[in-house]
Amino acid sequence: MPFVTAREMLTAARAGKYAIGAFNAENMEMVQAIIAGAQEMRAPVMIQTTPGTLKYADPMIFAGMVSRLAAAAKVPVALHLDHGNSFELAEYCVKQGYTSVMIDGSLLPFEENVALSRRVVEMAGELPVEAELGTVGGKEDGHSAGVAYTDPQQAEEFVRRTGICSFAPAIGTAHGVYKAEPKLDLGRLGEIAERVSNPLVLHGTSGVPDETVRECIRRGVSKVNYATDLSITFTNAAKAYIAENPNAFDPKKYLGAARAAVTSRVCELIRVCGSDGKA
Image (cartoon, rainbow, N blue to C red):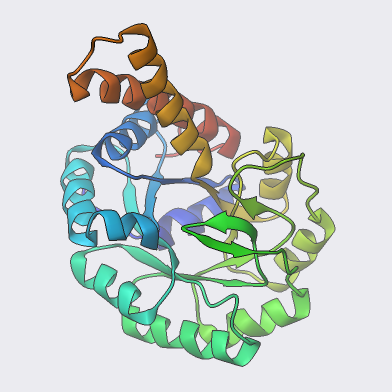
């Protein structure tokens, strides 16, 4: 089916009390795997790329791949810029055919974050925009930050003034690999959900226990991001294939094994999100 925007997906997810699985892709095989998993589970899905990924391969490459595969798919597929780090990158992704973008001004002072997010919303027009207030900790794309929890009252003001579609609060998650089980402030999440009617997004989910993810969804999260989890799955499967077949030289073999492993993992995570059968 044709490319879709995230807005209709997220609106349906919020109403249905499930979440859209939003999966970061680093190459063609991961894009194929994510869509294959979504089709197997009959689930709407979002494919995401970060600024670091887009330094490796231009947004037009991902937009071309995903749009063609989405047209042949039987489930809704959206393409999203994750943690966009500049207005210029967000604008370029929109021009290349992305169906939603995130602008991450979370390290800026509040008023500057509002101004940048609002500017991207105005540029994107009908396309949905995601933004973050507070700071999700950890490391992603070489960027490190500590956790700065989102203030619920400030979140309400931020969403109202920016006009964003979806909102990413900081409740204790972090990007990358957790050294210990994360302790999320679920009470804070519930209060934000009471004040903000927009779909909420959970970042830094790789390593968060499945039941905690489900509780976040029950408390208002409509989009769940997975990045590190899939990269680890992909790399481990490729390493395992090469270890078992040390004379292998055909990239299709070990990349195919990695692709199959990611498809299986995507199916598992879609079940956690509760979006299976929702396409």
